[in-house]
Amino acid sequence: MANLADKIERYLKEHLSRTEILEVRRAMLAALFDCAPSQINYVLTTRFTPERGYLVESRRGGGGYIRIIRLNIKNPEDLQDLIERQIGDAISQNEAFHIVGRLRDEGLIDEREAAIMEAAVRREVLGLELPYRDEVRASVLKAMLTAILRF
Image 1 (cartoon, rainbow, N blue to C red):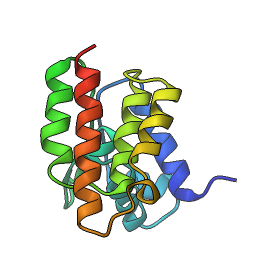
Image 2: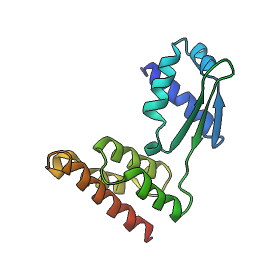
Image 3: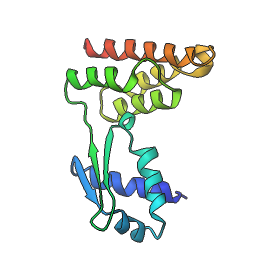
Image 4: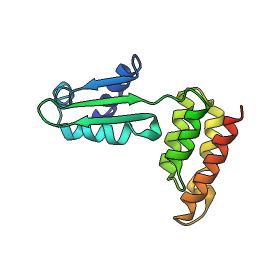
């Protein structure tokens, strides 16, 4: 049985599958799912991140809304932007997995390639202490994405 966060995420992604920008009211979502607005915020901040391919804009107050923008990778420049802006000099395992999942979801890599990429950036494989592990992970992930850019 799915928990509340999963249900909210599924609902929003279902609506985003038909459009690249979704505007909703936080209060409407909270009422729909019979939950506190903070639970909506939790889903937005943990499941609709740039690593996962989303940008969330929010305005609070009486006329407040949430705008979720799906960030698609449509060309090599978008992938280069992902390399430069979202990975940076260091990246956590979780963030790296989100980026790999996004590439898989957008059809840029297949399941096998995703599994290989995830295996290469696992903390157990890198075997270094922080912060070096996150720095090496970023370098490895950037190298793999750069290889994808060549095809």
